[in-house]
Image (cartoon, rainbow, N blue to C red; front, side, top):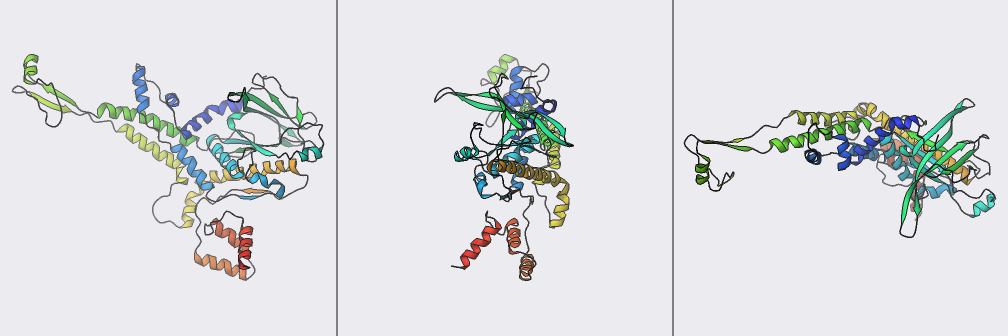
Length: 457
């Protein structure tokens, strides 16, 4: 079996990922032709014209951006030890912040239901001592992988627990020929647990030939990892199994809406203009002599006809069934998921809105929890490359998807709670931040410290 072999679950879902991605990013002419079938006996030029007239309205992409906007309405809460603070602004080793990595994870889980994070560290000579490696000032980073790049995996049961035993990651690596010329080639990174339960990495080229030996990956203590520090993030859970893309149902309806649009626009083009029908008992020669300019239609134009002749504009009515079906599909997309970002009219209490949105938000709540768990886990694994000591690590996205306003009476009640010694001041600041009363990205503890400093001036 070659290293490029793909898992059965991968093969079953790859077309689904492609459809959802196409729907979320918009359709080129080539992609549109995949979803608008050519009719029997339809000439190629006619078919191309029909496809070109179709209008794609990106409900899928708008829904994705709306959901992501709800998640990141407030900044995530992040706590890292001092020796990992560089990851705030450079989490992936290429300048992407932790927040940007989380946004990428949200995009990917919505489009494919699957994303991967690997705690990685620059490879060094195994002969180097721990002190020599520290002097090189190498830093761990989070390597990110889309669903399409996680091509194969194997899970085994060890000590009664499911554990990832092998993972194949397809990477697109640059190859530089000179200063101005380069290309991209496929590389395969294989993560394994060897016979000694040690985590190893090995690289293969596009032909499936190994280009490195199996390299044992060690932490700051010098001891090998006894597990693969790769974290799946899914739409349902964080197991290696493939989950359903959140946007898939909307994407399917969106593509159907686009297919209807091709027929609708073609229908309007055919029936939109009228046809002038002229009947007369004049001979062609007499008609030409009486109307030397031919038949013209419009203002200040006329025709000369014989007695009993008639001219009328034949206007065909366009079919309304296609437009009605498009409107129906738009409503379906709202019902499937867009209600999470579109607010209905009328006055509603906060509790009524919460009850109405519970089922709609449950999937988004699950995604947020899965991202929190995945990023916290990979940060914990990155910690093992930096230090042998434990440290507090937290990553938590916002799960309050609407502006949660606080009445002045509630603020007074919190202040009274602080005066009575039953509510910490930091919790008051955190509550005001979450509700949008305090527009400051700093941690509540830092805001309080800044307030105390100002009081001394």
